Image (cartoon, rainbow, N blue to C red):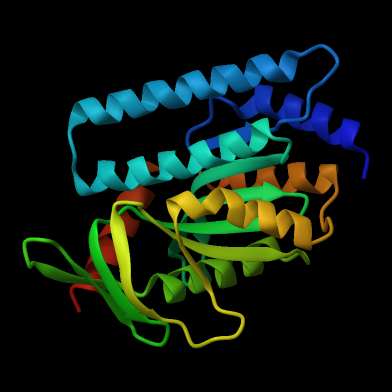
Length: 253
């Protein structure tokens, strides 16, 4: 693969879409002019400012979810600084055949393939089995609540994403829980086991995959796929609200 081509191409893409909602390109490959380094610094500054604004609004389920996604994006920034080239897409609304959408929290598009991340910024104890429909969160206060099995949730994301992209590529699904929770009892029956990890493990999870798998996408393909995903972050507020209401309706059944 032509690494210089990737560096220059991703740098150009960063300039074009850096200000886009829910999408940012990151890369650690340096161009001779050093322009990419300055773009990364701008990206980091904008990310930190966004985090401060969210913190000022106070903690709600929505802001906690966004904060978890911010932390994951921060891991991708660190990877970029170490030379792991890629593009990050957030809140990607993948269209389904029935006219609804499957919302993916974070996707990291790399030459190795796509890392599809389901973020769970939870606290307390987490219990669940791979085959269960719902998992359980138990707080120190003794309060318990159930949530849809994130392995099945992310599996659906991957299925619809493959249908939409309709190109052969490698996909790494991973469920990322906050470091503030304890995965108290998880029973994962498949072999190999699905990736269910803490945020603190995400960096080395990706580094490990990077070393195990050859490149499956060229620099041009990374940019093309990233561009298609970026388009899916630009949905209307009406579409987002309809998706929220549909998910809430499913939870209430």
